[in-house]
Image 1: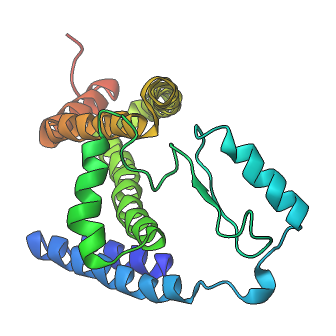
Image 2 (image 1 turned 135 degrees about the vertical axis):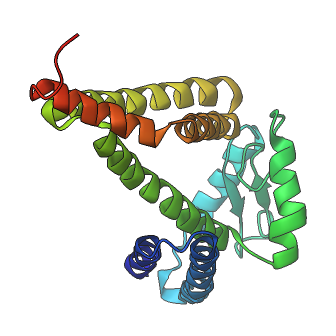
Length: 233
């Protein structure tokens, strides 16, 4: 499905359809999400796949969680003796707990109350939607970056420019991971993801400010100078 979706978007890009192409790409992504929903519905667990534990282990597990709530796990005991039957525990940092005291908890609350809950979409479907949009955006962004950079690069200095391009890519991967780690440690994973989003938006803005035609002209001028067609100043 991902291959078909990517191929369809590439086909639309080759047609240079403008805003109609954007709308068609969004419709294509929507169709992909609709198709993926059937796969999510089929992901059921059979009774043979359900693992069980002994009653002694269940009692020990419940006792272990009695003294702490600072974790991201959830348990529920089905069956067993009356002392533990129906016992449940949800950690304070469990993914389903929206209010975790972070500065961007409002975003998770807004999305759950106004998007996911009204549409009846579970976590599995949310990840599928996120994956489709991120794949379409980031995949095309990488291809677009290389294509644009190749147009701005003088043919006589290709190795030099693309060596620098590769260095910047490795540096960005290192800096992004470093920022995510610091933000995650200091303020949680939600703030860490926000820092990555800010970096992506900043890159999008800077890319939009590039004068591609002027860059191509300068690259051609540099090639002409290197080939002796334009005298050195």
